[in-house]
Length: 394
Figure 1 (cartoon, rainbow, N blue to C red):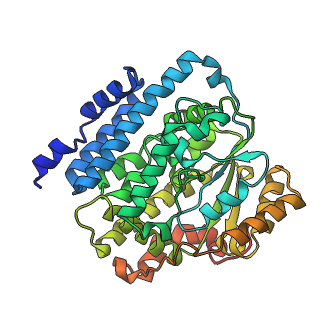
Figure 2 (cartoon, rainbow, N blue to C red):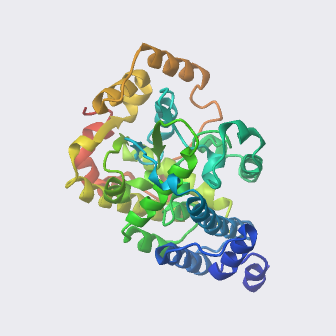
Figure 3 (tube, rainbow, N blue to C red):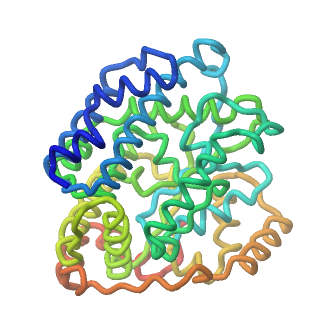
């Protein structure tokens, strides 16, 4: 199918998708200009650089339309019930390590605390309108998310060995962000990546917080435990919007992180692009990770050290209950023997590699150990002991 036919069948034009979102929701005003700029930059990058297959165009078109619809519905929620915007989001925990550093495991363990909760995938896909706990089982958004997960597993079965996904499980709050770097994982979009890394993301985090307020409306107050690697380059903006946030950064040897991340990128792009050459994936994936860390290191040097806790992947896997206890003690969040028992029970029920083994090498993605170590020189100078598996600082 030619490019013009693909564009007609699966448009990425923001104006076309905006009109669809307006018709679907019956609403017309999604608000501020910052919201639109990123969508237009992403749309142009996808058209000009990504070489998307039909499935990829349909997926990204659905994603852009979903973001616009969610924005429309969010504003309508707050218009109808202004008290949503007055809710507290006290002392949220953000897990911000690189992909493949144990963030998913730590996220699952941290939310075992009775005061903690995490956004589930089906709610992240469509936060508005609020739903009462007793009505969740009948909510059509939940069924839609289950269909989405089944489709993703059918299209790319290997993805389950890389990242476990379920409609009802906790998931990354990156789905609440507007100008996120997530599209750079799913498709080759270098111009969008450069644009996104240069943005002040305070408006994005204000949007993020408003959606958390919608998600918690009508529910008992608790502490959000959130995670995404894409918080790394925006950590200063995050802490400006969430000044009482507790930030946990996971660390692992870059020689293990980078090939694993490249494998994730290759699998994600195989679902969206017409062609994926693994050896071409590596250099771009390495630069994306490096640019994220450059921004993080620059910001962290001037941020309050009391806001951070550093944890090694090796400590997490060797003594998960002990690490979670130290995190809670560090931030004064409370931890007891019952919490340790819950963690030990969860670990028994969720053995590593239960969904299959994720295999990868640097060479298959066109990278060498020297290239990786050179690109991560600044990170290793600051966090080399943690990356090597030494105990984190509390």
